[in-house]
View: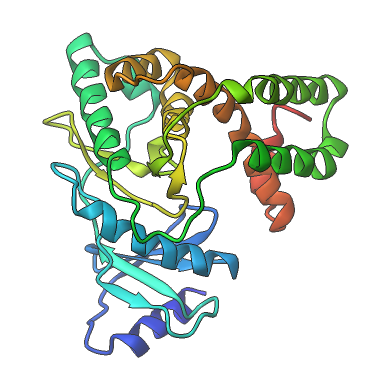
Length: 288
């Protein structure tokens, strides 16, 4: 596939000299190439990913207007005229910074943790304040969305689950539906996949300097982005960030706790629905 992608880039941008290519193994929905150590090109793996990439480009244009001190992808290469897998791509200049994982955060000192949490929350405050004008998206309907998700889990994942695992999943979904009428939040522009692999940090300043992969971005519950923080960095750092965010709505922490529990199941569903055995096993490892 790599040669197919390179040929497509050359076809659309014949003046771009490609001297070095590295395939990056990231993302369920896109194949990613690093070109000349300075450019990132993303190619959707599946047909449904094509519309997502186009939508993502629109979102990045909106979000770029208010981002300060933290870089996000700025697509400068695009191929959207032929909507076929292998022909559609988006390219942007590589963003510097390194991802940090749980030990880097949880074992840090108080000052370092405070700087990192402030920096992360500052990004989310700006993102969640970005204009959603021009985005052709309806406001989220959590009850409909998660009823559909639970139905898919029951049909496609329950046959592989232990009995106690089925009971556990049914329990936290049931609790969510019981409390759903108490959830009151203003829909905002969210990242949608705000996990450690998409967050780039500076070793010296300790600040968040880049955020990538806006493929799941859209109008949603701000708690969903905090669920990504929880999944990546644990409860203590998550709670510090939620408190710093100074959210006036009650329930953001509880919603995030629920959303985080669905992440592995979503990965397993992706595996089933796209014949991705690795994703299925990774998502189901605590349930089989």
